[in-house]
Length: 308
Image 1 (cartoon, rainbow, N blue to C red):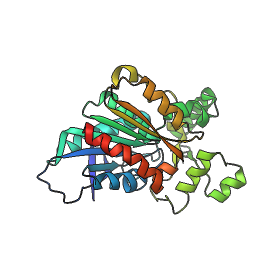
Image 2 (image 1 turned 180 degrees about the vertical axis):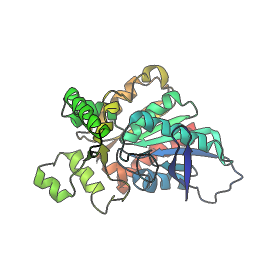
Image 3 (image 1 turned 30 degrees about the horizontal axis):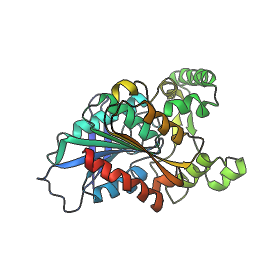
Image 4 (image 1 turned 45 degrees about the horizontal axis):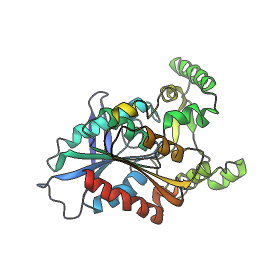
């Protein structure tokens, strides 16, 4: 593995990324390459890199797992911005970097997105034609979530609060950063935050199982408005033509990945598309638990081999 800094030429900071190499890597050989995108509030050291990145590299792919701008080890100030437009632009900069590498076959670049990274991957592929195949693991449409559960099903009130906070910060008041999860599973139970996805997210991100100093699940309130008006699947019927594989668990939670998976499979213009339902497992099980990860990869590996 090698850690690199990718210059974001539009915004003047670097995107941090880890490149995972296949066994017996030869820099003089051209490899199919997969961009691996982390979930909302996560980082490259979590499921996108240390699980799927490693395992796909073992199967002969070069895999690049990157941190979103304003998050992880990537640059950008202020921190903890979750802006879908900027998240999608990150993919373009990663592709720009990949096509300069002698061992990357520019005609065989694919993408894999986990959770919110799945929605971003789908959206990026619609207009970034250098991406030739799209896979998602429990992919979620962050814009839908912001209009629904993440705003208490009152997006207008949420937008008013965001606008008020942005004005306050413009006038010099402190930043308001939302901590999106309870600090521990025990505290989640005490608070009654036991809905499947919320609790299991806490169990993953707030314990040694998935904890990382760079994967903090925080979001700057004043910069959330763009997400409320964004939709990962907008124009999928027209622009999403690449081969598509969507992997979800059948143990459904409030974040709605199963619902979003069914929707995008129905809407995508892609001629090759498949919904893979991993029976008996949930959204966060697919992040790192050996059995559901193996079942997802049983489908994804031949998908990328065929389409890259």
